[in-house]
Length: 449
Ligand code: SF4
Ligand code: SF4
Image: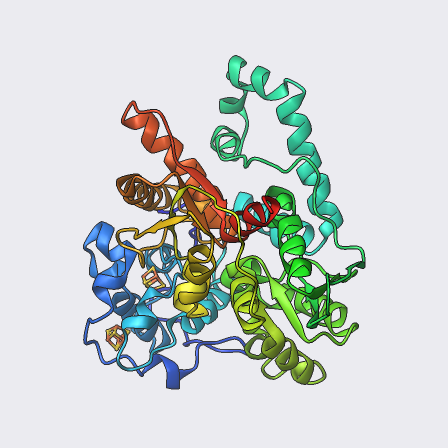
């Protein structure tokens, strides 16, 4: 059983009444699947396990069986759903247009309503999804505590004395997965960064949650790149996490509350566009209309935000970004984040930006559509599969011989960084590939001028 799998199913066998409530999977979506199996080879968990139950078709069959009362929502059933990365690679290969991501989000909301997770999981979910993620200030407090833990020597002591193994909640594993944090966090407090030259547009920029702590330098680079291209950037106050992690984990109610804050914050400046430097957050905001279906009052504004939202690469190309003039002599491979490739369907814009940099040689990555295994909180809740996929991706990166792997998503950046080190250690090689964002490279090229 996975660490994020409920410990109890609902009621005695055969008594589950079917999906119900406002966030239930729609039967019109569920019964679109014709079992053709075209999605199987696109699915990372199927590729790794070869098991039907770990494929999109298998998971949909389980949803139907549970919905029809033929099967209970047992820990085993939920375990198969939990192992899904929600990478949505299956949607791209489905001839019937099954909106699998929507189905899985709704199914997870049902799991949270109808099953009981262990006390530790309930506590972790409540603290994480309902207390910390909705509050940028609390998130920064956690970030500062992590910095103190690392820098004060506490980490060395905890590791050296074996204390971590005695603590509850797999503290030793949590310690191993602690991310690198930025020196200064990126804080949204209503900053206005004027455009250089003639102003082409005014945009509201999302700071996000994790990215503001782990890749604040990239958010600063994003501001520089935008203003350099005539775009006025407002990092509007009152915004916070986009809610994607909550939505994907079956917590739509808190996701809606978080989205409301962002909607009010962004629309307060009447922007021409809303920009996200994180693929996952951009994808979530483009889905705000769907999230607010049936929520009178915010639905129109949610649709407005969804329509205004642009991924950074998409926005730069739309506003005819200037190609740098100085040479950056590096070999780069580009990793398609699932939320750009499969969800936002953006593939050309990041490559166009990389190809615009003189001297930069772009080389293709093998298995571009196979998820790196990051997938939001998946790397914590499904560690084994996440690590397998991370190493699979890292080995593909190493095989390109590139100096740098460029990405457009914080989860992918952290996962690639971790997996590249793991693979180098396993193979007793020195790690030579760095991880950077596409905007980091554009910013670096501009800085040479
Ligand atoms: S979302 Fe990804 S992991 Fe989940 S079933 Fe589809 S392809 Fe497989
Ligand atoms: S490709 Fe689409 S219709 Fe075919 S099995 Fe997969 S989800 Fe069902």
